[in-house]
Image 1 (cartoon, rainbow, N blue to C red):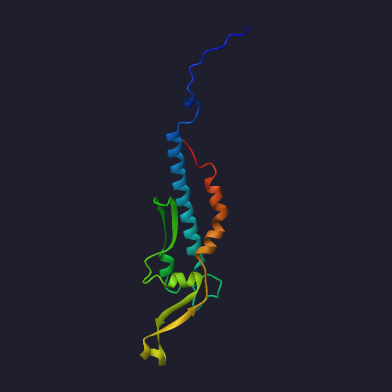
Image 2 (cartoon, rainbow, N blue to C red; image 1 turned 90 degrees about the vertical axis):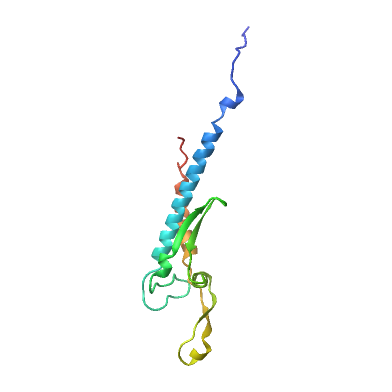
Length: 151
C-alpha cells in the first residue's frame, strides 16, 4: 500500500506573484502605447509634405508653412489608459478637423468680398491621422510581442 505524502503547499504559492505581474503588464502597456503614439505621429507628420497649391481631396494636405506638422503631438492618458495622437493648440482647432473630415469653415474674405469680412468655404476631406493609424496597425501588434518582462 502507498502511503500519502503530506505536502505543505499553499494554493496561492502555485500562481505568479500577482503584484509583480500586474506591474510588469502596466509598464509594458504604457511603453507599447507610447511607442505606438510616436509611430502614428511620425507617419502622420511625414504624410503632410511641403508643396505649393492644394492637395487632391482624399490625399493628405500639403504643408505651406509647417504649422500643422509641428502641432501633431501624442501623449499617454492615464485616466483612460490610452494614447492620444493628433494636432493640438491650433488657433481655433477648426482647420485640422476640417482637413481630416471635411466641412465648412469661416475664412477671411479677399477681393470684392472684403467688405463682408468673413466668408464660408467648404473643405473636402484630406485625411492624415486616420490613414497614419491604419498604416501603423500591423506595427502596433508587433510592439506587444514579448513586451511583458518581470523585474
